[in-house]
Length: 347
Image 1 (cartoon, rainbow, N blue to C red):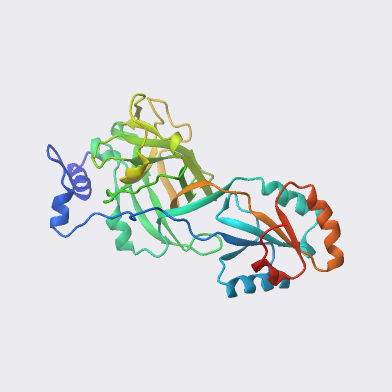
Image 2: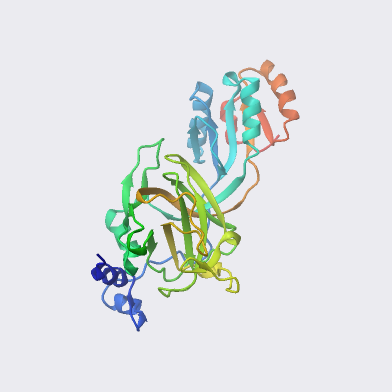
């Protein structure tokens, strides 16, 4: 049975009053100010050096030198799906075979991105998450689906240190079939000019979800939507170009509507729905329990491919690898001193 209290709770959280519209000014008077986006250009963090492979003595020496020079550095066992904010990739040639090198060169053809976080969960409190994200489920129109977003603690390196879990039960009963979580409006809104789209670092359950941005503060303003698929229980980076966002109203596309005004993004929303758009069914939708873990919501634009830095165990070992890399069509440098990665800038 439909519970009208859920609709009232939802409208109250998002400061929406029937007939009056948005009353965020009243929330401010009552000591509930809106969340604020950063003022001014959104800047990415400094590019990092990625140490790839087992923590050999040479890579440990390189890591210590980079840390001492206060340069960002991480150690990974496998190449990532995207090269995110990565300036250089360092390998120890003593542990690399010709086949390994060929695979790494192929991996370095993957897209490279500069990413600047907008919303991340690491370091947030449960209260902060609860005050920003609210559920908008089909209960607002008579359905019985229920969802929410909660703060989770991760265990690196298999998961981020903190992430949000959008989870619940979605049902098609009572003509329902969607669950979502949405931020309260940001004031001032985000100015995302100069970026190409939204980048999500997430782990799903194999279903297909929607990302929704709005450039107006109204409850029922135009929703700019894009769908994305997930790989069950795998952390993955998902890029959503602004050009892929479709203006929609209640899952119906609006071909004549204006595109997203990226200089005034007011809110973000994540949704699981039985529908794609215009009555077409979501091919991966499954009613019942669901979960989508999100560590970062960020903006991105393309970046130059990272430089491959290979550390040779001896000067004599340098020449064969130099010949092999010379035809690889990737920027590279070969060093014999692991500490020289601090100053290394090109081949």
